[in-house]
Image (cartoon, rainbow, N blue to C red; front, side, top):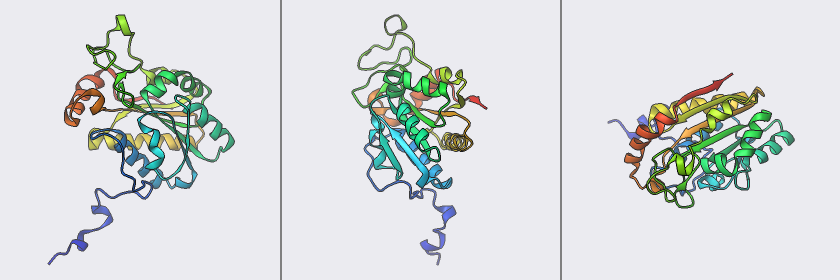
Length: 254
C-alpha cells in the first residue's frame, strides 16, 4: 500500500514553506495581497541565496510589521522616508541587497519626494510598491492612487477629479526618470500572476547586483476591509476597475 511518506517529495510540496518566512501568524486581513507578496519575496531571497546579505526597509503602513514575517535584517523608517533610509544603508553598505516595502499612501503621498529623488539619483535599490488604491491601515481614506469613482471613507460617493484631483500613476512617472532601470506593474490574484511577480522581483534584485540603478516593482492589490468587499469580490473589482487604469506589464526595462 502506498504510504503518505512515499509521495512527500520536494517536487510535490506545492505549499512548502520557505525557511526565510518566520512562524509568526500574519496580522493581515483575509484576502490581503501582502501575505502573498511576502511569501514570494521570501522565496526569491531564499532561491537567490541572499538571505544574509539582504536588508529590508519598512515604513508606516499595513506592512509596518514586515520584520515579523521575513527573516532578514530590517530597518524601520518614518512614514514615507523608506527610500531615503535605504539610500543611506546602500551607500554605507554597498555590498548588501537593499529594498523598500511600501504602500501607496506611504510611497505616493507623504513619501512622494523621497521616492522621486531616490529614483532620479538612480540609487541602487529595489522599491516594492503595494498599490491597493486606499489607506488600508488608518480607516480606508482616499489615497493618491484611488481611481475615479472609487469610494473611500473620505469620498463615500467616489473620487471626482473636480473635487479630489486625479489619481496618481507613480510608476509611469518613475519610468521617465533617468535613474530607473526597471519599472514594472504586476499582480498576485492568480497563480499565473504570482509567477510573473516573482520573476519581476528576481529581475529587480539581479539589477541591483549589476548596479544598474533603481528597480520598481509595483503590485496592484486588493484591500477587502478598506473596500468593504469579500476577498472574491475584491479580486473581481480589481480586475474590472483597477487593471484598466493601472495596466499590468513592464513600463521600463533597460
